[in-house]
Each structure stands twice: as C-alpha cells, then as structure tokens.
Image 1 (cartoon, rainbow, N blue to C red):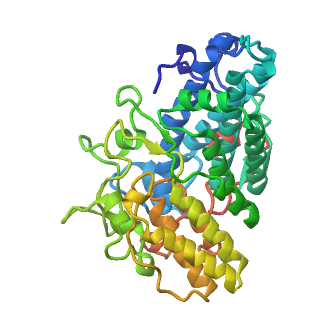
Image 2 (cartoon, helix red, strand yellow; image 1 turned 60 degrees about the vertical axis):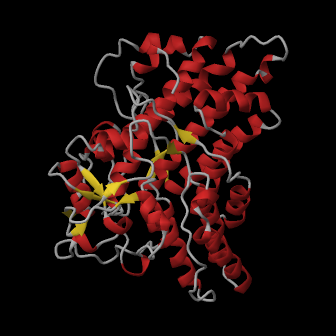
Image 3 (cartoon, rainbow, N blue to C red; image 1 turned 45 degrees about the vertical axis):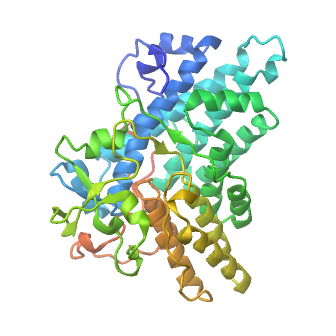
Length: 458
C-alpha cells in the first residue's frame, strides 16, 4: 500500500463516543482536509484504518460467533465470544473495537465530504466540478460511508447513520442502516457515471487491484438481499464483473495482513484456529472432494481441539503478512442471485436458483478470480423443495465466504429463529452454530451517549 501522510496516522477519533481528553492534533487534522494536495494521503489513511483495524475485527469476532474460529486461548475477549448469549457484554474488546473503528472510518469519510466541495482542484482541461480526482475522492468516501454503516447493520440491532462528536448520535433500526448504505452507493455510482478518468484514478490510488464500480455493485447486492429487495439484488449482482479482483493490500511491514499478524501467525501462540470442516456440521459439512475445504484449511492430523472440535491451520487469504484480502468474493454474487430467486418461490424461480447453485458448485479454481473453486458435481437435492434449496444456498455461502465476516449475518437471515427458546443455563454452547443474534453496544457508548439503546437479550 502506498505511503500515507503522517497526519492521518495520528488518529482521527471521529466516532459517536465522547472524547475524554484534549485533542491537541485536531487543528492539524482539520487543516489536512482543507488542502487539496493532502487528499491522496487522506484516502490512503482511511483505507489503511479500515483494512488494518476494522477488517480484522470484522473477521475476528463474527468468526467466533458463527463457529468459523475455535478459541485456543484463555483470554476473556475470545472466551466471551464463544460463550455467547447473555455472557457476551459490551465490555468485550473485540465488539467495542469493531464499533469504534467502523465509526472512526465513517468519520473520516464524513470529513472528506464536508470539506471537499469547498476546495479547488487544479485541472486546466475541465471545470472543477468534473475534476477527476475530486469525483474519485467523493465516490470513495461515499463507498466508505456505505460499507461502515452496512457492517454495523450486520452485527447490531440498531445503528447510527452519522457520527456526532457532541455525543448525541441517534440510533435507528438496522434496516434503515442498510437502506442508507444503498443510498450512499447510488450517490457514488451517479458521481462516477461516464467519468472513466475518475474511476481510473481512484482505483489506482486505493490498491494494486481495485474496481470501485464493481465493489459498489457488490455491496449494493449484499444490502438489497438483506432487505428482501430481490429484483434489486439480482440487478446489482448482475452488474458486478466476476472476472475482476478487488482486494485490500498489505506490504508485510508496518501494514501486515491483520488476521495473519494478530491471530494466526505461525511464529506466535495462536489465539484462534479455524475449525475442522470450516465449522460446519451434519448435512452442511463440506462434501468429499469440495476443493474449497482444502483452499481454506491445511489439515493437521492430531491437531488440538476447541470445544471438542478439531482445529486446523489456515490457508486461503491468511498465509502471510503480505497476503491480500478480498473486498468481496465473486461466488457471493451468484449465491445472492440464487437466494433471491429461491425466496420468491415457484417452479421457475427454484429451477433458476438451482442452476446458479450449480455454477458455484461446479466452478474450478481456474474459473474463479480468487481461485475459490469447489469442482463438485451438480446438486442432487430436491429442486422443488424451497427449504432444501435455501439450505443448500446457505451451505455454499458458509463455505464460499469462509472468514469474510458474513456467516454471522447470513446465518441469522436464513435461520432467524435459531436461538429462540435457548436455555443458556443448560444448553451446550459447543452445539450451537451461532452464538448471538446481535452484539451488545459498547459500555463506553452506554456511558457517554444518552441515545444508546438497551442491549438485546443476546
């Protein structure tokens, strides 16, 4: 990743919680947003903050909540997450850290959009309103607004839509969060329409492999399916070029792949390991010969266990400090379309859903932009049984998107009543596929923000 300006490394505490100290860097930070030449560094600083800090927590906590990771430590953070239910509290550093960093990312994006239209970006060829750099910066800031709000809606029952440094951020239903994220995406796409110079500029700035338009459509498809907007989800997924890769990149030095560096680095005592068979059980266990199993896991005979379940070493996107992490995976788009078709029901829709499932099941590693290929035969289940089709779609989501932070919200979407009636005093946590419906709000948010909602029961 390109070198970023020192100003952004100071840290921008732009989230909804009250600051308990005098921020001596505030004027320096604010000045940066008034300098056109600083914006490359601001964009890269925001990208680094997300890719190094938010993304790690997106994978870490939800990976434990949805049984992708097994806990290998005695730390309270991981122990609370694998106990789940009412045992998980707002003091948990993974949950509070995720909340804090997502708000911090969004705060930087909000600062960009609050200041950028006041600035003159010199370009003699075009009027300033159509200056490619400015368009690219604005579109990327709106993307970051969208995905930070969307990730909040993935994990919390109620979310904030904008930051408030006066500690008065209000919360709304998570579905409004998804809809707001879609609105920001649509605004970004409108900015980029017929602006190829802006697209090329921001793509080259953000990553060695990045396609902002495809990223926007991919996240739009994800949020539309969460809202049950099936036609819109299919349309957005169809607009994603599945041959293109978009990744978060790491240099292996100060900027290491955070999951490798903080969680599973082979030279340190591991806090977590992936669970055998990708954490899936029963009929959802990966089939014999599913190459995605070996793509993500390095099987170790006699390996230790977590919760009685064997654990393995990680492969896939977590093998080194320089390994890139996908922004999204192409297989998700095929499964979104399959889910949208299946949920609408009817013979024709179910037939189309199964055809899309089979595209995922039969694709080879060479046929996937990231090498995530199953190389299986076509599904042999009952294509007239809507629930059977949906179960197969979930199974493929869970395998295809292993450790992408999505199994938690997807499992809740497919099986919303899964935890109903659970007796937390007698039920074995080890038997549960999902350990919470939503995360509690951080204790700091409860203490400082009078608008913070009550925590969900679990």
